[in-house]
Image 1 (cartoon, rainbow, N blue to C red):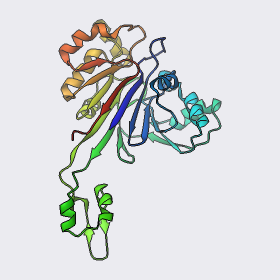
Image 2 (cartoon, rainbow, N blue to C red):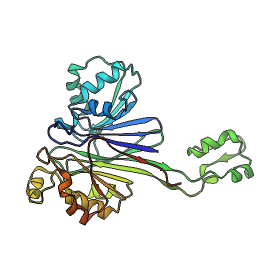
Image 3 (cartoon, helix red, strand yellow):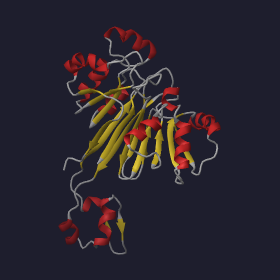
Image 4 (cartoon, rainbow, N blue to C red):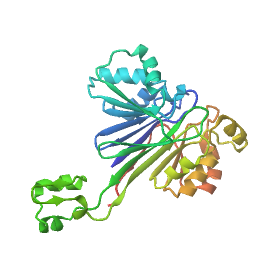
Length: 302
């Protein structure tokens, strides 16, 4: 199961009823945070989730509404007696930006490793899942992210027995490891069926529609895109500031043929996103104007 929660859905400035941008996902004991706007800690506390297990923090870009909550988050993680390293992923300049923010959080009981994105597309393999980063089009360097859980084929017990493979090797083969013995070599394809459908969540804010976003949206079980503006007349402003409207996000979801779309990262002037949804549903009916704390639990098909 992959848990996903939009901790904050606001852009530019926090509001009494809307925290700034952050999304958290949990899979198999691993916790991933994408962006950390002001109020993220409070939103996480409301949700009942803990910051202590966060082992990966990704940043789309370094505007304040996406990273201003980081120093406090790190201090809270340290006060929770976290000692395991944390991996941070983001555009070039990540270590410099985080270093500057850490002036008020200089001493932490855990190490921070930095992975600065330099290519238009990069894939980061983790234990049991991978993070796909892809460059998008904002007025500063910005990336979207997909969290992908691949799923191997079903293990064929009878085939393993017929090949004389001892049970102690089964788990390793199922995880994709090749077993080399003195008198035999066993590969995963010898005992695994066809690859099964996995899970995928794609998250992207602060961009104009791009080919990279359109391509990475395909195959997502949940697509989370910014809807900075709901008012149709603000398309010109969206283009000038390199953001997206509700309707542009809906077209991306429609073309990618995803099961569902969540809108997020609303303009502070957009007090009631739901008012614009009837026109959005004409483009892509399975669209939700997400609110802070919006949660989904994604399960494997079988």
